[in-house]
Each structure stands twice: as C-alpha cells, then as structure tokens.
Amino acid sequence: MDRLIELGQLMDWYGEFLTERQRSLVRQYAFEDCSLSEIAEREGISRQAVRDAIATAENELKNMEAKLGLIQKEARAKELLDALAQTELTDRQKSIVDALAKITSEDDDGV
Image (tube, rainbow, N blue to C red; front, side, top):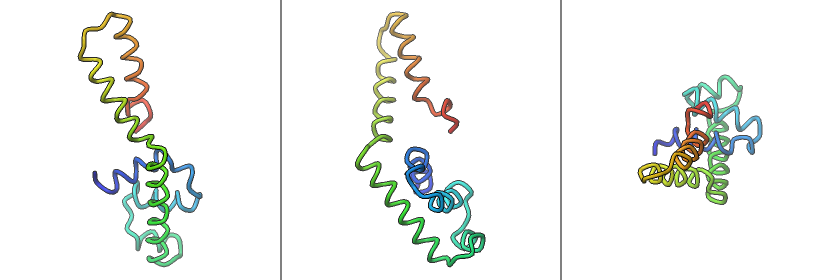
C-alpha cells in the first residue's frame, strides 16, 4: 500500500491519539501533500524537526494498529460481508447484510 494512503488511513482511525502538533504536521504531509520543507517554513521549524515529528507520529500510529488491529479487522469484516452477500439469503438476512455493509462502507464515513 502507498505510504501516504496508509498514513491517511492510520490517521483516520488513530489520529486523535496524537498530540495536536503531531496531527497538524501529519495532516499537512499526508492530506495536503506538502513537502517537509513547506511544512517547516509554515511552522517555523527545521525540515529535520518536521521529518522526525512525522516519523515519530507514524510509528505511534503503526504501533496502535499493531496492538488493536482495527483497520485489519474492518477489512476482514468487509470481506466476510461480501462473501455472505454472494450466498442465498432470505429478505431479512439481505437487509441485515445491507445494513452492515452500509455501516462499514467508506462512503458513509466521509472518506
């Protein structure tokens, strides 16, 4: 997976656990596509400080996913729902599968 896409996904799930400063730097880097130099200039700090802060935040986010596995669990749930939707279901079962699919869809959470 592309590093920036993965970082964005990690931010969506675990970003609130970072400090406001870390969130700001990672958002600029991952979501606004700013270079380290651009961020450094905006923030009035060195490029190296930006790189270090982003690397630290990224490691924290990856550690959270390694411990909690929420992104991986959601992906597995979607796979299982897709497989279930391919089987013969009653109307009631179909409506439950549809409701679960809606809950886990990216469109519903604004992504």
